[in-house]
Length: 189
Image (cartoon, rainbow, N blue to C red; front, side, top):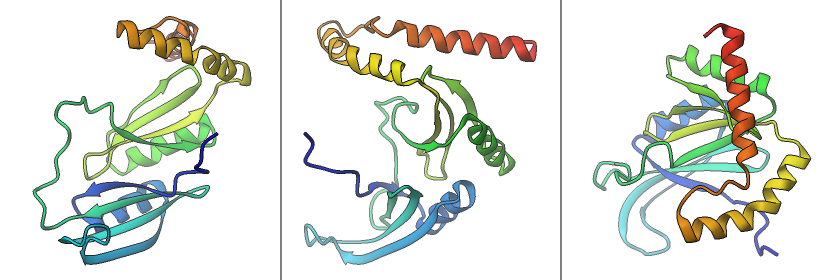
């Protein structure tokens, strides 16, 4: 049993704290709740002025950012593809996901998706700092989620041995591909 009972906050670096707060407030409706700013890092004592901002993502979840003006310019892990590291937020339904997509696109932001993952659908876009943002609407059934949980240990074990995608949940990808093909057929592609 986990000794934790939730995530207190998740923190990322940002280029500009004010611009970041405005983006998440304007685009995703998050409330800016708290800021810490100091010249010395509390845990280490080292001199490194920072602004630490916190945004309420809803449901007790908090997203935080650090602006570090004395550090080298912010970059990304060049050894990891851009699609890997991302911040995913839950929305209540596919209808809300589509409405969010329209809202984000109306602000001039490029959006990828929706992408059907079989048990949820997602859209993707980038924040002003280059962080990939995902909005996801759950669509899986209790039975599907139970089956994924059941096969998870075997999948991880096989992956650890072979470094090839296990096929225990191939049905999930087949379901997603079928939904994608049906959607393309509806719009005449």
